[in-house]
Length: 524
Image 1 (cartoon, helix red, strand yellow):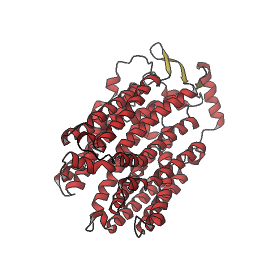
Image 2 (tube, one colour):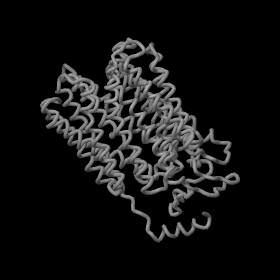
Image 3 (cartoon, helix red, strand yellow):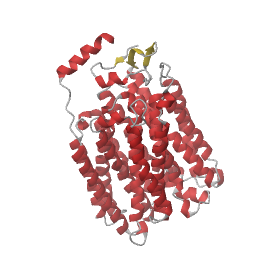
Image 4 (cartoon, helix red, strand yellow):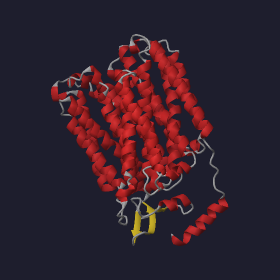
């Protein structure tokens, strides 16, 4: 069976292969010596990527469906108006909070175990949720689902880094993985709309069947992961729990959780309420405290290793991630609601959003075939975000969102705006993951996803306030126009910051690369 050897010309990768943070394909002899480091055959690489991508598809699918099922669940479980936001927030709160934790666990222990058991737990919880009749039990199990779902993403990043060679193969794998999330975001609402047509009472309600469908998809894919994803065979290490940085985990988890909680309660009860101010103040204190604590630790014991900040453009990409997913959230959910107000059925309203998913998928395929598009990301990201901002501007001039206005303003904006935002998403993902050492892929992926999902919560919270600037909510197009103007300015602000702080990375001279290769060759 043929294998693809890892390139010896990468000093960063050589340093990353310590036995305490092995990839699933490492073979270790003695206590610390790495005898051989190889990748699985190409066919098995594709199988692993397919499993990881299916998990991401199912995870995003189940989250996006709540744009459709929030109202039916509210009625079914007799949820009062003030608690309706918790139908979505109960999941997103824990999901965003635990991403960094699971990333660190994936790097220190076994990414394959984190992924597999997290996925099977996610499926089991989805099945259990489908039978619930109590709203508080629903919130609790959805929160636990968020913890399980958060295990899937950073562990998948770690497994991709361990399965694919550095360079174009790994970049294409990350691009394909990112593409599945964009597809699921659009298809999730359509599938939810179709399942929502089940109009039966009690345990036969449509939203319950959607959770059962999620479980039916998760169990076989999780079982396949259990069998097909290679296990790590690492030397024993007695200090891994200490290296997990439990104080850092607790502070960062609290900071993210309290920030999301503050924004959620502020949007529900008002920005002057104690429910907004108290957690926000504590969160603002907790974030600097976390980074101060991390500076006191070395790379081996820090949750977010200090050396990451020396990686070219890591900080710039991480900050820029705070705008990307928020762009989709700030137009996707309002458009569905306005389509419904315009007289569309739920299925038709969901179908109207498909151009965003189709455009994102087309761009991802182009970047898989032509990875050079984002090899130097500064100008592709600049052009991409100008397209996204242009879509926001175009939508403010729409005379209506259904009928002729849909085809002249909404539809074209969805196409070129989503295409641009997808380029920015993939360029950020590949730029961060390719620049960082492979043995840190889990925690880096967790940090990146935390930033991206925080952008969604921030965008929706700000938009919730803007949609009430004039009476009528979304029935008054003035409110939607105000939110689009804000998103336009928000996108341009973060783009300006990225353009200022991004630094071009010069490739290493070929002579030095050859020298590194010659030095590394005898031990390979």
